Image (cartoon, rainbow over all chains, first blue to last red; front, side):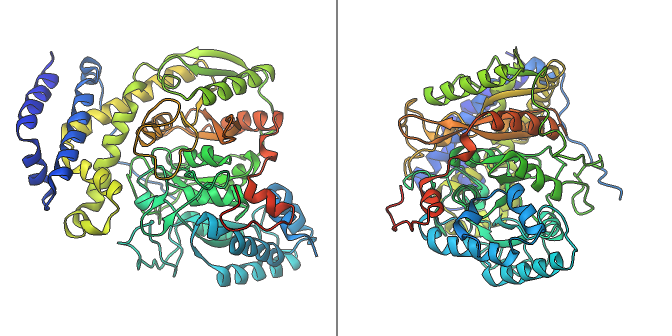
Length: 73
Length: 488
């Protein structure tokens, strides 16, 4: 397991114990239990999917985030 | 006096010359569309706001100009619809939301400005999925948009109103936007042509954002040639959008009759055909066979990272949306529809590292496609893996695959939002037994719109799909008024 995946697994373990409270803290508004649970599940699935990205390939790849000079017209 | 129902059945490339030679008047044409909207839109709900007075004024101006020989080009006097997320000065731009119900811009979006400069007549602002964040156009504030091929089914989204209106002949063509599927999926579901241009080909200025790095304005029309004419009018650098490209804008209509003989077209080995309804797969296979018969060479291409496209796309989309919606999410959560609120709130939970990993994945998928395009000129796939699902049943498992329609509807389109590559959906048949349209997606390298338009035009010319009209349109074309609720 690479560093990123280990970090993600640890995060998810903590999340699964306390996910609904974490959702309430981040979203910052009153949520019903159903809403908080749905969001916690949604996020956990998303995080698991990101953890499945091929870590070695990510390590050698720069994200396409650059300043765009814009059109000089 | 020309038969109004026939006028509205004409494509832009057919009625444009009639306008130019003054055998049809822009006022007559505009009135014909307004009449059809009044008759049929109560069933479709494709417009949030019809701009009848403004349209008639613009049509009279076009008539005067053409009358004195000042013809502006193929869109002069052509009545168009605009998705209600593009600014039209002085007209509310709601983005399909309650929150922006009273948002009145003072300046046109660049695409609207350019369409007006080309002489187009704006018929109105068209309904969409709330905040453009969804693929069904089941809008809780402005009502559900219905599919003209079956009023009990969704038209797709988020540009659902535009696709439904184009298909039903309630505008000659329309402007949509595509962040994950939103031009191509409704085009596929409604049997129209829909083009997502290259990122940077068309300005986003004055288009309310869903996700800045994924948003692409693009046209929907009844033919490939009409899409090319629309793109011609809106493409090009814009000081108001720093992401627009300085590359020259080519003649998008120039290669439409070049055919596909000798072209190499790719079929993805991975992902795109893994989850596809059998009828969609059957029709795509037939479309590929047609292109092969027309002289294209078909070969498999490998896109090993594309299986992660939907996750990466959804993470980037929801994160960027959450950033734009941030204050409203906290202060006005009750003003959102439930599905959109849930999706945008999901973006608040995404960690920065997950957003960046998704951006890295984006780069890897770009590299995959770059390798493929070293061997082929375009890549083919289903536009959407399924036909339009029934209204109200898009969040529960169903259909031949027993999947949740909303969970897979952007599966085959979102890779092109991540890569910025152009992609077009062209009708490729009708499912059996439902008779619902299916779209073939043609993807090309960055700024290769002329190539994907060429392939799409060759396919379109070899088939008869573009001649079919939905029941609601056919009734009109034969001069028979559709009874409310009885047009399927």
